[in-house]
Length: 403
Image 1 (cartoon, one colour):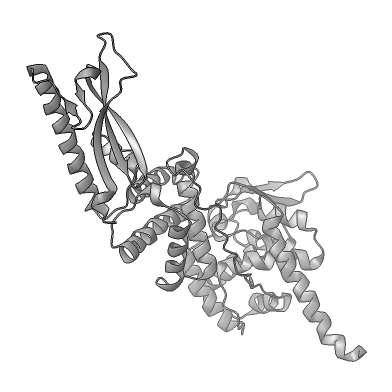
Image 2 (cartoon, rainbow, N blue to C red; image 1 turned 45 degrees about the vertical axis):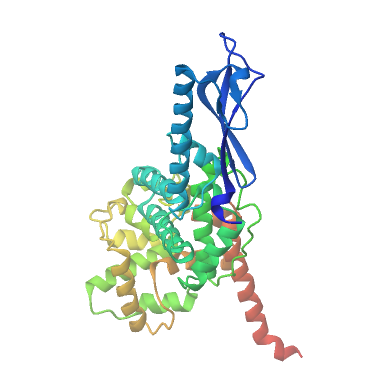
């Protein structure tokens, strides 16, 4: 059926209701694709003078003529609103059409407008309880949705009410195919969109949760790490630059503490605490999550801090943590000097701490989780799986001896 026939406007007199003058209200009914919405016009007439077939007041007096003129204006305004929304190319609901006719928008009614509003709110929280990296993630999410609408629907916007499971599945496969984004990263963008739309689902702007039946299973990721032998190679590598030596020391400090790049950059003297037994530990909230990390300092980490301390107190360390890109570029050169085939990068140090330094040496996973600043053990368990696989591989080497 043509779309124009899906819409129908009509008036009726609600004779079951009377005002103080004994007149009944005139109601404007919008029928659209099997749904209907009644809008109170603010006009009244005697039920006996209402022509139900014509949808007008049948009397010919001046008051009736004024009422009929207002009804024609309402109907004309409704047709204009419908035509404008129809030719916008953006799907809309009867509620949005009703709001348009009444001269107000359902707030918010369009996906991109809503996501842009969310991004503005997130931007204001940067540096307070949101990192800039998190803001950039949500900004990219917005850009991907905009690109998707242009490609899939040839539209700049989309009705929030029309978002359903089919929309999300199309968006996911668009990320995988057109954007060539990996499976796990695509799932992260779906989760980011879910986070942004959650308030709209909770408040009923999106009536049915479109994410309820969406199940995308992430692919297991092998997180690289350095062996003890590789750490030793890096430590003993001959470097011809103080700059490379500095980057190596900071990287090794991360290997011995599990601090991420952003937490290393934020590390200050007040984060380093001396206990009553004269041992040292780091106590610092993670920059990414705010979850507190408690990390006892190993002798190797203490020696690095002492090397960069301007006094006899290791808390007076003074080093320059360059940008992540510059650090990783220098680590590539260090890896070549140390004859390490693995690609060195700052986050590799955190994985190395979790696997080689702690779990492989029998440190309980609960303690490792606390040191890494994980909110739950589940976040730490993938490191335990890596260690288990390492044990399995090591045992495989001696299997031929006992066959």
